[in-house]
Length: 288
Image (cartoon, rainbow, N blue to C red):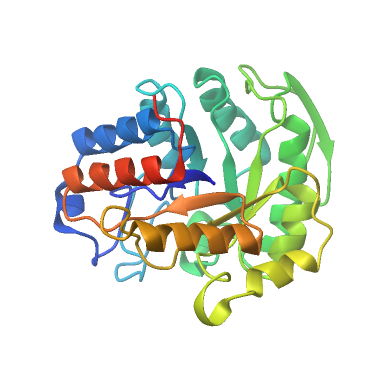
């Protein structure tokens, strides 16, 4: 199972371990370089500009572009996954230029996780229409496909239109891998028609929802090479419960997952890295 990490520190709610609340640049670099060395496929970073005080998901959200640009210079293999980028917040050419530059400087190590967004307060803050966000996101993704990795882009759609626009530097990847977030059938349809993978929330293959993921995938025509990213609803403990971790990965595979987003139990940076090491050995990741 290909595996990336649901990054600690970069998105922080009140129930996280104390060390994450106190962590800064040194800790972020340490776990990122450990994940890079241990063969993890990606690390995540959220996408929020500003949220209301009391927002249920917390109030610390690192900026994905700035964070990944810094970490790209300090790593060699690991990919960078905004999880998820709220597509309606941005003009497609803005994304093609900004994230294309990151892709260019990191030698093609970007995978884009996208969603339509749900925090209406943030839409209002940014002056972005909320009610048509699904249709706007679909057109933005088509426009991004027409411009990403190209020196000159042209696109005419329902919400975005541009003609012969130069984008330099442009992305190293001619085809940007896009994983679409969301657990609705519309999100899944968007993923199979416009994306390269689907990234539902960490439910649907275990417990009461067992079988949901598999049945939803069976309802669509899944393209060859299509990725399905899942995660466990609870943190795993590869050190103390390796058998349970193996069971979870087996259930994910049986449900149709191809990529796993890992969260682990930990109370310190040292323990977090130890857990990453134990999982890498258990899952057979390509440790360097």
